[in-house]
Length: 270
Image 1 (cartoon, helix red, strand yellow):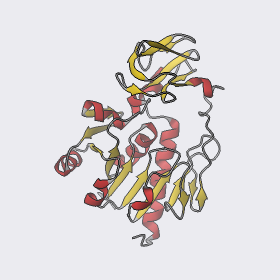
Image 2 (tube, rainbow, N blue to C red; image 1 turned 180 degrees about the vertical axis):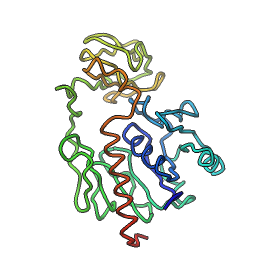
Image 3 (spheres, helix red, strand yellow; image 1 turned 30 degrees about the vertical axis):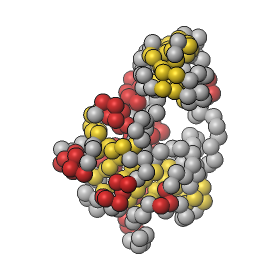
Image 4 (spheres, rainbow, N blue to C red; image 1 turned 180 degrees about the horizontal axis):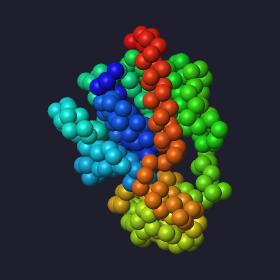
């Protein structure tokens, strides 16, 4: 099992919790991303290397790769390779033993077309036993991280998870279309009504007082309705902006459990 290749679709903050667990335990992890990732918790997302070529989250170093040689060099140097490949063409070249869909798109984006010994999907939009061997619950609460062997994860609630009693107001969606320019940075303390960025001159204001823990990449062209920022009402939790979240760690650990279950089952999944 050691050195088996695992492809992870998506390199956002939740995916990074999965990637860390798999990388730490000896798997060769290959991450597939889109050309311009939209992660707002980019300080804890390996997808940030798409913009910077190399990016470190805690104890893992992610590096943008252009070809197969780059990927093998990354593994040789104990780094996590990330390639721009939203269509999954890399999967045919590397033939991974496991594929994890960690896009968290709340829907199935062409996951059925990929073949592997084992397939795992995070969150709603996938049917366990059909679209994936195992689906993992991503909704906060009692069932967070639960392995689902038949059926579906909880449907998308449309509401962000509760943090210190705050839900909808802690996440900011763009009211404008245009290029975003930062005024505040991730980790800054902000007050309700304070301007944290502008979009083509239009002010983007915080909905509450707290720590700015997520903000989409500076200079990104945003569209109306796109999630662009996240404020944590717990002002004392500044350090959390730069470490993998409890939710991501839980899902990462349960993804590892799911892989071990599939590995030990010995079932031929094609």
